[in-house]
Each structure stands twice: as C-alpha cells, then as structure tokens.
Amino acid sequence: MQYINKLPNPSPSTAIVDNFLNQCWDGAEYIGATYDSFPKPPIRQILLHEQNYLCCYCMKQLTNDHTTSLEHIAPHHCSTVEFNKYTQPVIVQNVVHRSLFNRGVILVIPGIYPHDIAYHNLLASCNSKSHCNHHRDNNFINCFFYDHQITHKVLYDSEGNVFSSEYIEDLETIGISINQLLIVFRKIWYELAKTKESVGDVLEDDILEVVAEITISDKFPVTINDFWGSPSKISELMKYKWFFEYYKNQLNNKN
Image: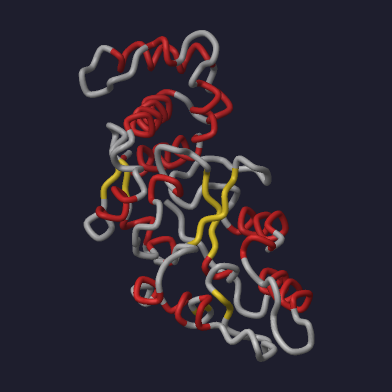
C-alpha cells in the first residue's frame, strides 16, 4: 500500500476542474458540470503520475486507458448523509457534496469543488470486477491512502495475506484481503524475492516452479493450469511486481 500525496489547491489537477467549470459557466450558472461530461483522460493521467502508475488499492500497474477506472472516494451517487462520513481534512477542505455546490455563483479559485468532479475526491483504480473499485461499490471506506503512516499500518506476510490493526475492515470492503488470486500473486512474489536479486531476473520458468510448489498446499486453491498455456495468469501476475520490491526490502531488513 502506498501513501497518496494530493497536490495543493490550486494545482495542475484542479486547473483541469477549473477549466471544465469555466466551459460550463453560461454567465449565470453552471450548466452540465457533471461527471458524465467531465474530461477524464487528463485527470486520470495526473492521478496515475502521483500514484506511480499503481492502483490505489491492490498495487497493480496501471495505464492511461480504459483498463484504469476513476474511483470516487466519497461515492459518485452517495447521499449528503453518507458524504458527511468522510471527515479526512483532504476531503473536508476541498470537496462538497455535488447537491450543495452553488451552481448559480461562479467559483472563486481556489474553491471547494462538487464531489463528483473534485480532484481531491478522485483516485486511479484498476477495473477488476472481483476487487478494488467495483468490489467496493458504494460502501464507505476510511481514507487510508491519505494516511502518512500507511506503509507501516498495512502489511503483507509471507503467505500473501494482508493485514492491518486499523484498516482491516476497509481491506475487506475493497476485497484485497479476501481475494484468493491476489493472495496467490503476493505469495508467488514473496517466494521469488527469496531467490532472485531483482525482478528483472525473474523468468517464466521461475514462476512456474513456484506455482508448482504452492499448488501442493491446501492453503492456495489454485492449479498449475491457471499459469500454464493460454491464457495464462503470468501476464497478470507481472502487473503486480511491486510486491517483489516490497518483499525484497522486507527480507533484507531481516538479515
């Protein structure tokens, strides 16, 4: 897990929102200033850059295309009551529920933006159907990605499990602590980090050797067939190579 450092307001990111709002201002009110018509590729590019091109939840490598989704921290369709649960300063100081945004008064920059298009309420997530953005749906989560100590509060063990004394319910809500394939992926990277010096040294045969070993265990309901042949899970596994460095650092710190 990584800390996401949102840029101050104003910034190049809020400039995208400002320009969009300016285009929607007809001289008396904002017309059509909603997420449906919001320019998504430019803001997605900035979000990816500040997140090191990693999913805000599962640490999968992302690209600036349809395989990356924009995640609303306070959900797009949440009520004002639900919105008020998000008390993190980053949200409170920069975001207002879209129904409370005054569309009849031109925004004075820097301002507080409607939550459906506010930069500080947006993250880049993978588009998996079984974890992260889609798995979370509209459920509340704490803003753990804005916690400066998040790298010490969310940890991964040698079996691929993720745990946290403070955010365990959030990890379950986004599915990364219960998704079996993610657990297997992390386990594989741990085993590879034990024997390889760098991720560039990892070959397909190395991956298959590890998979063959862990398939024997009842802990991992995965078979070699998931990684052998076509389509193979190996290409998807490689998108999670962040965990190689995580486990390598963990192993080095033990020595």
